[in-house]
Image 1 (cartoon, rainbow, N blue to C red):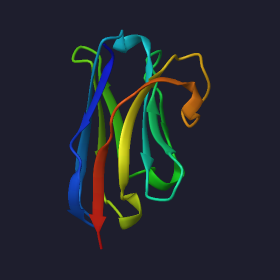
Image 2 (cartoon, rainbow, N blue to C red; image 1 turned 45 degrees about the horizontal axis):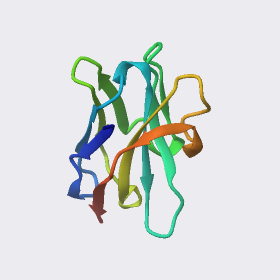
Image 3 (cartoon, rainbow, N blue to C red; image 1 turned 45 degrees about the vertical axis):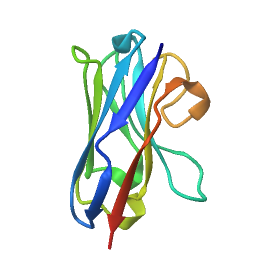
Image 4 (cartoon, helix red, strand yellow; image 1 turned 60 degrees about the vertical axis):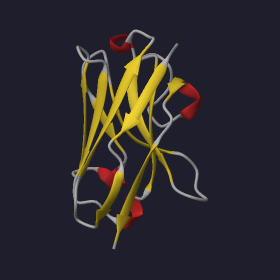
Length: 125
């Protein structure tokens, strides 16, 4: 059974930090690019960040560049997202997802094969 278990969400004040983790099982983790998405109430799911399994290259949406850092540990089948200088507009449910390195860009939800259940991040002003 494929599982992507996101954790680490919570409530934090603006300017604070949170670290998300995504533990994967049931598939060959190091054969997939992994991405983080988020969805705020009433908004579409947004691609936040992604990391390649081929060369470790990373993607960040403009609004999080310089504040978020994505990383992966293939030995532990785990993806991470370190979020610093958090803003109220970062409030959302955060999801991790896995896709083939050859199928579409990081922000295209249809390119992803597997999705986690999401973890809530709330940033208070």
